[in-house]
Image (cartoon, rainbow, N blue to C red):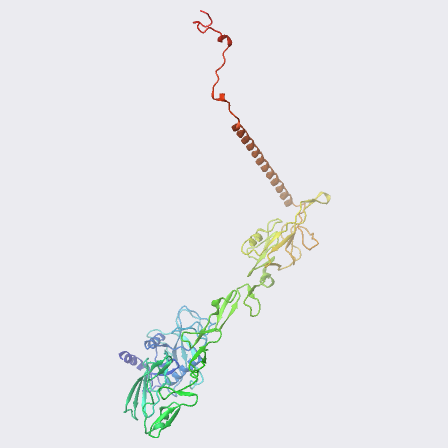
Length: 604
């Protein structure tokens, strides 16, 4: 209570500053319907201060997700504004964009989001496009058009601007709108006789005229013309699932004096007088009387439209219960009474990229691909070599999966820009740049000479001529090569080398001879120094290779002979005398000498 009193003292000077407000002007107005209540308040506050006041009572700054919700807020503002007052000023709602989050013009909310959370809504009602700044917080408000005499028929536009700083609120902000959500509502009490009813809601709002009373609200009923009679205190309670009532039977403040003549006896549909001064309530055909003996409901369980959004109510066979069903592309949420979008992309229905949309989805192809046909999910490669992209290639365009490459004819190589051709080495072999471009990345195609070659043959007047070498593109089945800028017989920059573009194959020739099948042939000229050097190089290389082979053969022969001798020596048999040593022979004359003679050579 102290907090509420302090808040009232804080807002009182602001309220009295309004030129059209009297001393008894209401500081708030409440509209309750469905499962939510909307309260409009006066107050020059920042967006953060307004959100704090709403949150303190259990709510948030109001969302405006649908046109229906916009009309509920419009009714609350109409109650707050006195008849004849100028329709000026702005009221904060719960739509904000944080610092660092930039404008997204492709979304209905333009990159803004609701402070209470939840999904982005498809409904929007911008007065003008928001600013593209990302360096500060931006907040939205409902703008009352001063050119309109009333709010009827014109929903307030959305305006965005600074959110205000503490102590310095935005000058043209006059108030704010809060939203409070509830699990259900009770019907307002109908009195069968004179009396007064005052409702106190959980968000501290009081009113004597609510179209629906939120769950947990308290009703104070004072019977009698001046309220001096009997008093009743009732609580809106949940009797069963999605069923809320006050827990009483019969109309309040019923009077035998008035019977059905006062407020239809408090009955919702029919009131029947009795002979003894009593009366009772009844229902029309197709309806039934509830336990409170006052309220009538349809016998069709779907008559109260219990399903929300795009959900459809379907009664059961006994017409006592119902189920909510969703259209294709949606599924029931946790309440089983509303539908949410089903993300079909989680099942990977597309070949490349899937884009989810409300209730459906569609497939997209990557860059370099296009849809296979109307309604098809498959993507096919775009042949860039037949469109404008491939026209950038100076030489030939080689189509690959999702892209393309530029190539050049033999004798030229690809420039650093990737599209132009520059003179290459003076050789009949394909350029190194072309080979490298074909060996890296995708190998859908390559440009190489055919294997049909022959040795030099004699020509007229003692000259020699090399048989034709044909240059052909070698491609996979899914690759194509196209000449993008056909020209007639242009030089490649090398002496004696001519390049000619063909609509069939890239070709190279050193002369002007052409085969019968349209392929150009390459012929070396016998008077060019390059050809002589190349021939000498081949001869020297051949001689070196032969000498190397002879050296290897000779070395192998020597090795084998040495190995054979060693093996023969190891296999020769040994005699018994090989382990003895021989004594040198002496002369026979010495053998005949007397061995007993003291002097050799004498008998004595």
